[in-house]
Length: 364
Image (tube, rainbow, N blue to C red):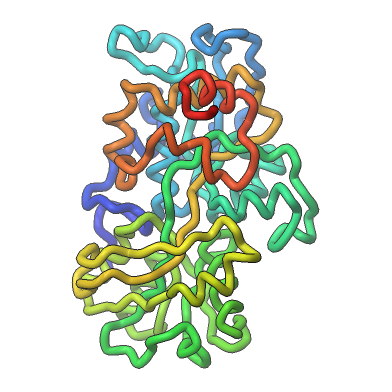
């Protein structure tokens, strides 16, 4: 199946302009081939005490996800919102309202788990990840039990909710998670939050990967495999409507399997950052009624290496009123709200971000 112009987690039908997706890199005359080198640039520390004072030219790398996924365009939007390259017009004159001197780029990765590893290694400065992944990383539990806790991991904002999708063909004889036993199922690519949560959902139903014929692939290729009849189902965690599922539903009749209240009850005690949710009816062709599922917050995270003034400036820039229109150009952007951003992050707020939310009245 040929994907439409947005990706595995997006909700619009038009792919954001390439400048939006890649942040300010292309605006500076840097082609896509330049991005890997740019992403490896060493950030120069800023010395300014006020985020409205130029911090000196600085590059920041935002870990996102697959180019076919929603994290990548949302990361590009964030890059645009927080960047203010040297020589830009000031915000009050219609220019960028980002952090003076900051140039941010969205960097494609494997997803949430991969992003945490990049932050830990210092190859990323900011990253998108699921709240449960952030919690486990900071506490050194679950998928991070072998690597130990990461106490220097902090949140800048909770952005929106992502919903679990378990997709099958409409004529499939699969109706429950237990029915996946013995079938070929795409669980998500290595390093993705989708793979982590797919494993949790299987475990909640008494299954693991050895009970299936697992496939580890991105959502776009997984949808193609479902169309070709080479897999029987695939998981994806994303903001509904997920564009890859929308496109798939236009190509072939599909169903979404219910992940109901009983599933949530089995998981919520051990995984407090999952919540019971619904995918509304009518979002996808052939799925006219609501489908019970689980959701988890998507969070913008960083580490203690980011100084307070820069963290404050990034957070303020992200929620600047002049950037509201920019946020709304990207799928779930109209779901982003500053008042909700400091809540449900799964990990503590960075002190610079907390300062912004306190000043703005979003925290008591």
